[in-house]
Image (cartoon, rainbow, N blue to C red):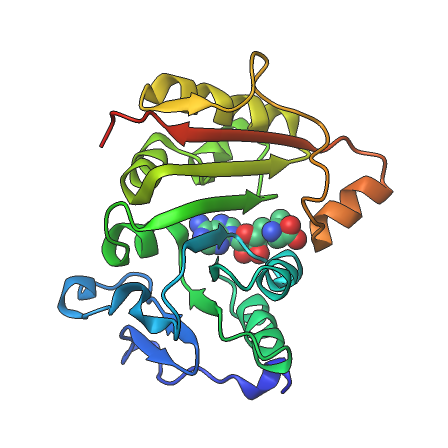
Length: 226
Ligand SMILES: C[S@@+](CC[C@H](N)C(=O)[O-])C[C@H]1O[C@@H](n2cnc3c(N)ncnc32)[C@H](O)[C@@H]1O
């Protein structure tokens, strides 16, 4: 299977949510999300704890995890079509029935499609840092997204955020701390710089080869918050 074997099923004008061949398309600038019945994690052949990676890029970290950890079901969320179809092709070629791909925007998918307390773990690896002050509004880790993460995580669940960008790291940590419904796994300064056998991604390799430090932060919902 090659990435180009995945073709969008409709034109922009006819856009609608659709599930086909291990992939959900979540249209943007679309009003009808609530009219679509997403079956939830029944989409997986086996009922297992569900982990989501947002901003999956070409899916190298995700497919490696899905291949090495078959005791859990994995969901990759990516909004760029060229990258989504690379993940989709890897899913097929590696025969990963425990991997489901979402072509869509993270906040939109989460808000409209994921039920509360249904996700065991969330991973966000090298999301776009939007370093210019005037572009900060495009960052994913905004208070409204954190609120959604708090809603979808199961009790005992956690969010791991990885970045080379120190400014985005501190910005994200501050938003988690301000949210009050999350607790940090790590003591002050709330991040670590190595995480054993975490795995690598395209951007992880890229930044490490350039000598950049990688930061890992992790938060979990306060046990009594829901
Ligand atoms: C810097 S790349 C990192 C890719 C991958 N995680 C890695 O480490 O190689 C960031 C990715 O996040 C995707 N992305 C950015 N904002 C997103 C959003 N709101 N929803 C879904 N994907 C998003 C981009 O399209 C891009 O592929």
